[in-house]
Length: 468
Image 1 (tube, helix red, strand yellow):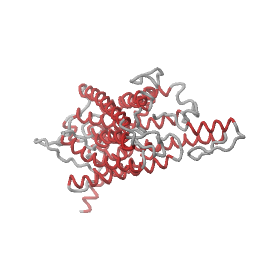
Image 2: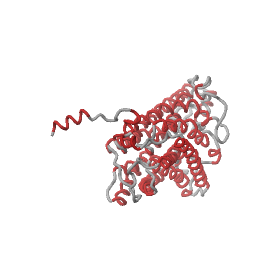
Image 3: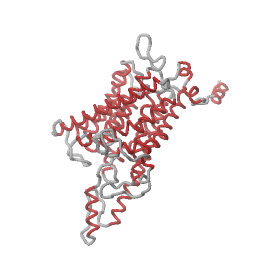
Image 4: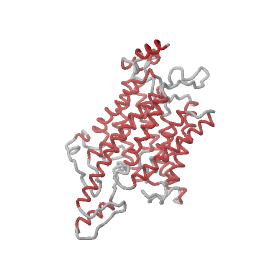
């Protein structure tokens, strides 16, 4: 689980060395000197600083999401995309602190609700700069919270692109509040909070299911309840292309997300040890494999190597590897990423064929690839992993037990998120605050929702005219 017992062996050795300072120097399994109290203190400080940097990288992924979503959609909605991503971070961090943190990590019942009003803002929240028990969990509350809040904001912002171009801002804001404060924390409680999925044996190292499936399946439900953009499907029901306004912007976003993932996955090790660079390399392998196979698949299926599909394939590879990266070797990693790249192209086309309008492929990238990542863990987990060799999947001779646990977890997350987000989007639609009217949609949400265009082309138009 996210707040798992980490570094236990290393810290135990450190404690023994402190109790017996005349004993021989002890080096733990990751090569850190644990012979003195100063070494233990340095380890804890390093762990906390490392997770702080990882949290910043994950938070910077908001910029990547914003660029991808804006680039894949029309220019008339660019400012609206920026505002939604900005509020996912701003409102999300505050609501996760106020409510979501307690639900996620209360150690309470199935739905995670427990006493402790005002969340992390309480007296025992951010007041201590030191870990409560370095022998059990060496992260101080402030850095732990920042890392977790960045994940919560990421889960919420996945939905933004799927509902782009036709959503009232106040309706989207209401959704962002509910998913960050309630829906996502409940799912997190099941595994990283020590809940029933954790007890079952479900594995999700960095959130293929908890983060990406939560955002991806909520995105699917949002797109279904909203309905397609005007003009997306013709009278015959066949999908029409509504081009995004900037592939360079979208690909910049892809690369920002790629960089941010080196906080997402290595940071989920929750300590600064020699497993971190190994996890980072596997992260790169998965993304690269997904991008390459998505490019090839789009070439075969669509006749040309599609830029958007290749970008989404890279992201799908990164999503899929999140679950099992702590239990994989490079072979399982490359296979997982490569399959994700193929799946995402096929999924995007199937979603369109079902007359569901998801402008950026959010469900395919995060929901479908996330579910594949859970399954891949049950298939490719191996005792040969230098990070965690305690599990073996089906292909490593461990039987189907882990695979079944992964399937149970994936189905449970999908079902809960579909029901909860369906009720939420349905309530917003019933209240008349979900979709803009036809006139506003055609004019663009930048003007109708925010009163100003995302791009002021007045000066540029003058330059172009004079050049002619």
